[in-house]
Image 1: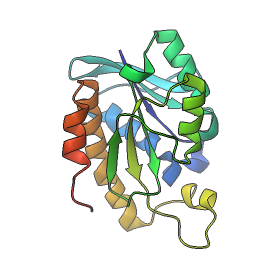
Image 2: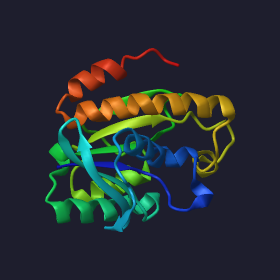
Image 3: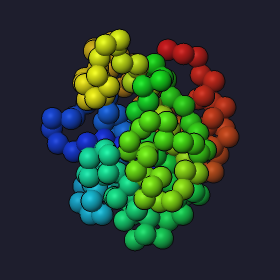
Length: 191
């Protein structure tokens, strides 16, 4: 079984914000693969399904971004998932332009509090991840205001288009083809 976690904050107030692009990615994947993500358990909204023959759990932690690891830890403990081999995390990245994605086999938190908490709660930074570009914060802006803000129409369109790339990359990762995903999407022309 493979755990696919999209990071974000719960509640209407945060819908479609930059920080919630991980939730948007889970919704996209769920729709494409006809997976119902409605179960409220393990401090997350979850759903079980199949992607290319691989059983998966899709999860949107409801603990707020900075405590995402609490939910992830509960899920991996309950389902006996190895986070290093059977988990991928989808989340926003301000160092990538809107519409771009980057796949990594492992890495540091890079200043992302949700990833920092997942590392702290699981005891490893060697989990797969798909970073989704949301653009750098404008000069003089507070980072929280930027990531909790909404995209302009042009950027939203780029990000919506990138969700198909996220979905394809994630399906490759769960089929143990992360190198192909990295080759296909990390080198993709900047939008």
